Length: 189
Image (cartoon, rainbow, N blue to C red; front, side, top):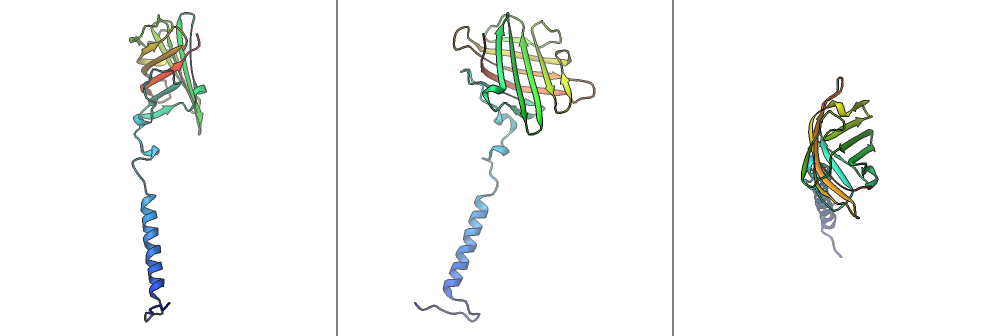
């Protein structure tokens, strides 16, 4: 096969290979660029689990605007005994060691809104534990909030689902605003 030779000694074949290589590098570089579809580019609200009512063992919320989501079903639990409901969730990864606790002290009724108060044993209460910063916000530090139970079954499968939000403040620590909270858990009767 005869190759055409340019004045500088390059052949057409070498020029085509160089052109093809440059085009391939360009395509690959642009194809691996950032995309709005990447999980890390999602809005915090879009990182929360769906608000389901099927006992999927999910728990998530926004804490000061950042997604706070449990990763496994053992990171969240619910117990309904002695006439009150207790929910708890924990995140312990990548330098974060935090927990959220919710209690409802009244009879559980679906679609009932329970006000979170500072008075333990009345309505509902909430805590936010931040071991990462040594700030443990107790029930008495909550300034406002509520829990809405959207599903509660009294027979197997024992499911409790709902939404929550609260604000808590502690001297010497950041004010914590928990919003868009949702849970869908199998509870222990």
